[in-house]
Image (cartoon, rainbow, N blue to C red; front, side, top):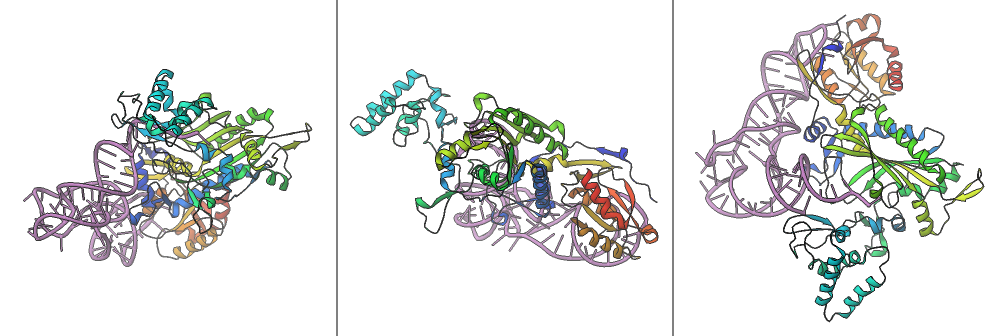
Length: 505
RNA sequence: GCGGGUGUAACUCAGUUGGUAGAGUGUCAGCUUCCCAAGCUGAAUGUCACGGGUUCGAGUCCCGUCACCCGCUCCA
């Protein structure tokens, strides 16, 4: 029996890595390829290769089990295309836009909807007067300005005029850049909705417009009562869904972090409004624990609570679970108290009641919603980066992906130590047996040490080797990835051995 | 969207004053091999990101486009 490598002999080298290194590893080993690569790629789009699709699938499966294998959460898979009114109710048609302007002089960039805040009331007034003078003779436009000021509504009338399609540009000409002070240096505002539009049916007219969903949440909200009644659920309960979402981002960035097509793992938990804080705190803790339980380095995880003044229009409380990526801390999951905003809006826009009759208190109310919204693609990137280590073993370097075994794309590899004496035949039998329940890989190419290292780089947690002793006592060695230590296990118990390891870790 | 950088084999990179491409690693085949990237022999793989231009001739010079990385901006 050969001695196994002892844990103490492994020296972890500097494991700081860069996005470029990860992109390179991801491509080389088949985790992620650039979309449409042979045509030069498509900005911000990526394809998951053979190992990547397994990792992603495992992440989603672990999430699904954690979130729906419980008695108070049910699953759902809603259509990507939904009635366009859904997005009016959700606020996306109105709010999901980013009108931006640049100063041509100093290159400062401003969001149109907050630009007005940069000017004092006095300056605003002056600019409006100048605009009116310039409009000399165009009664219709001057009247429009007066009307806006006469009936300001919720928004500052100055902002309303800035965003007016006829008046905005003219008003901009009267303003100085808040940064460099130059006048009339702004570019035209580029305003576009972040939702992808497409058309239902072959005729591309405005009546046929639908959107690719920018979040999966709305599919859950509109099915709230369907799920509740079909599954005979009482509050509090949740609905979970995994699926693609699309946002026409201005800039894509950082590999998988900001893309236009991405996958969400969302769960909306419906609660009595009086219990919202309790459940918000509960899910916050649960979700952080989930990432830790699957092996993410705890010191690279943190909450980022949103300050009250920065909360989205629908939220009462919000926090992000952040991971420390090579480019800095980035959100991998958001937990929000969405209050009764969404269901209330859908009641308003659909005309249908979405109230819940709570027998325990004998009253009807619109539930509050606690949302947990994780990015599957972002989690994928976090799990991949976090698992990557470069180590020194007996003076040789090895690259290893220390995935949690349940996330590992390949669960076990099977090797004949040498290609003779019937070892390949036995190894093939083991492979066939394990393949019934696990994603496994057979390799008889080259020296066994090289095969171990290849599997290390794919993140395979166990390697099974058929050796001389196997021929005598029908046992094989199981080599564990991280410690590189070996254990002898009877061939007919291998499947059970591996499955129990996967279940219990 | 702005500024900077990069783009040559699967990966990391060389490639001279312009003369139609190399290395290492990896991959594949064979030999050897009883446990951690061993050795030997052999092999395959490139529209030099894409499109124009200059030139007798462009990986190399010029223009445009695309993509990725870094910074800024942004992220209802």
